[in-house]
Image (cartoon, rainbow, N blue to C red; front, side, top):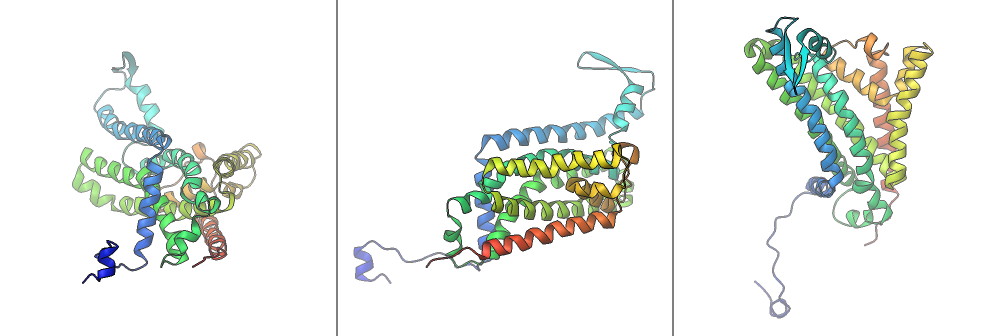
Length: 312
């Protein structure tokens, strides 16, 4: 019942539903995704990622069609005559036949787009909260600091899965329809779990690392420079040491994206071609580095968020 004072001031009684504080993480994630999708740059990069997906999607159809043709037969593509044998050699390097290499290569290429998007998204999702002093507002609500971190990581994780895991699952479903679906799905069920496990590793590592980096540097330009060093410079240095200088393959461990790829191919049950990617470190070494990155990022986030003073 509304009191006379509330009626005079036109106050309305509370009619909502109180939810546990953990639901705040979902609200923070939803708000973060909404903020990201407002920027046209993200839609442009998403379009580029979609082009990679369609290349693999139609590439699998093309591989099935090629198997029905003779090697010396020619085909017309965009008005250009291409010999089927040459096309087979080109597509053979991508392994577009529904194997573990198919999904591993797809996530590898999509990772280039994902890292670029996340480099720009870090300051939007997290850095601005520290730069503009918005974090005390979040923490002044009945939510814990872990809910804030979890909400931001969920936003990053959802975006990573939209670019990698979900399209890979679509390619898996497509491969089963192109071949004998009963045999393919039953014989390659481990690939389905491998894709999901690869997605979990990507989601956990990239989300924690992005939020931790955004808390540290906060602004867009330094964020891009840090991520360029992590995923471009470290890869160049690793290739130079392990390939050009013919040093121990363990030097490739400084390339985090390659470590994630090694972990993903382990889940997919596929070996990495040394002629194409060079000699690789052992899977347990890659898992150790990835686990160390996640643990370090979590510890740093806990200390930084814990240090924020909340008034009220």
